[in-house]
Image 1 (cartoon, rainbow, N blue to C red):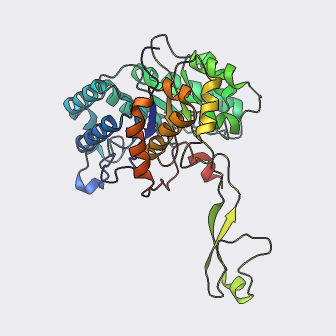
Image 2: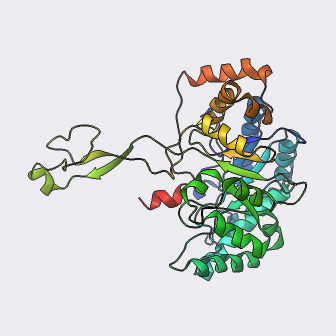
Image 3: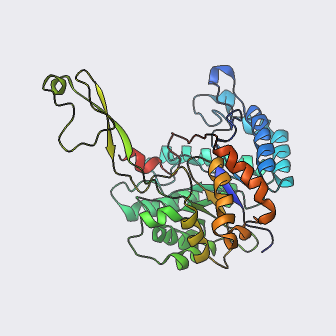
Length: 380
């Protein structure tokens, strides 16, 4: 192994609320990629301080760069060439692996050719940023197959057609991930055999959608083999939510008048007052949802299943960097053999204990759906 395996997290820095991941100003204020890069420079410093060496950039760091109705922003990426090159150089000097994960609205298999063209434009912009950062082929853009549109086979074939329309600099950066409710690992492998696109193995998605009953170790090996020699693959890992879900539901005027705000069999967070218009219903978990933190025993078991394989791991716990600050000491405590694969040793114990002590003073978790949660949450 040339270097320890990396652990990373996506976008928002929960451990430092003062650190922003992109320029979020409205278009009237003239937001710019250059401003996002200034903000992200501080994020790189935080990552280096905490020894977190992989990070997913927000897909919105270049605001309105591909907005069809705002041509004044279209040259933003090219105009930021020097800043992108400097940011990329800093990331490389710190050995921090970067990536993008375009939103669920970027679809190469849309039946609407206009949406496919717009999606290719979005991908081209993000690939151009990675190119101008002068990053190697480890810096990728993670995509999903997209919608089924009532015809799975046609949708898979349409993804291939969309991929073939992409410019070469986009094809160089695209990687395809198995998802949790539509296109399985087998679907991703089917596409890979016909295109050569690299694959991202998502552990939780594999459990949620594997109708072909593929074996995990064999499937993981096949996904990793899609990457060229000399380019380290990466995978996604998350634990499922297990707690009760809190769902807000309206109480109609008719229900209030009849005194039926609480229906038979409903599990409520609190008693419903006679005048209430909203009630909070408690429902079982949906296993596609990401937990705030990673179950260390589950992760250690997976890593032992993957013994001898080399890949970096994007951890998708909803508490973002905080989930890593907790996972690392957990691995050192419960699975030192796995911790060692990530370069975590007893020499790090004091620093990791300090991280744990900070977490015990109170933390938060992201409430918004992650990009990989958007599909199943929309279906609720």
